[in-house]
Amino acid sequence: MAVNWNKLKPWNWFKKEQNQQASRLPVRRAEVVDHPLARLHEELDRVFEDVFRGFGLPAWRPFWSAPVWEGFRPSVDISENRKGYTIRVEVPGVEKEDLSVTVEDDTLVIAGEKKQEKEEDEGGYHCVERSYGAFRRLISLPADADQDKLEARFRNGVLTITIPKVEGARSAVREVTIQ
View (cartoon, rainbow, N blue to C red):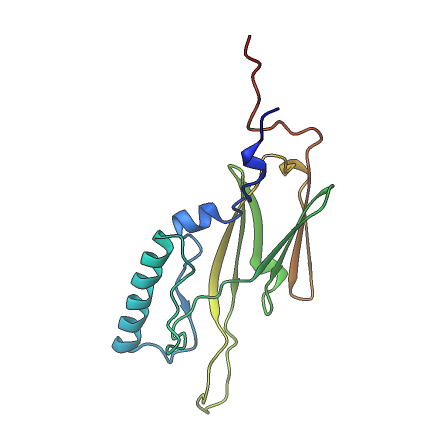
């Protein structure tokens, strides 16, 4: 009996996102970062991040640097049971109408926009930590995900997507008997 090594290798849910960096859309944190040094700092961080990612290491984030221009990138939790997969996306402050969920070539695309609140007050900011702007998350679906029965629900700032597994999904590896 041959060992199916692919079963030991974990599924990379974010392979398309890592390859294309499609979710890195420009995002504004109010108007406080429109400074040439802030843009230079952001570009240098992006270069280091790309180098680290090329070696399969976690993203570069120097301990001395606070993120100056960090994109709004919702956090994603993915769980699995014998019946299917559940994907939960935290999108606080995003309205249901500003979200879209599509499937494109075995990839789940979650896109949306967190709109900046307009304040009529003449006062200035002392601290701005909330991010605004468009986002896009790409999640590669495994072969046994039934894309036709995918369901999405939005409640209390959390988008929950359930994907049942296909009955008797065909394995990508098949043992061939040698005669």
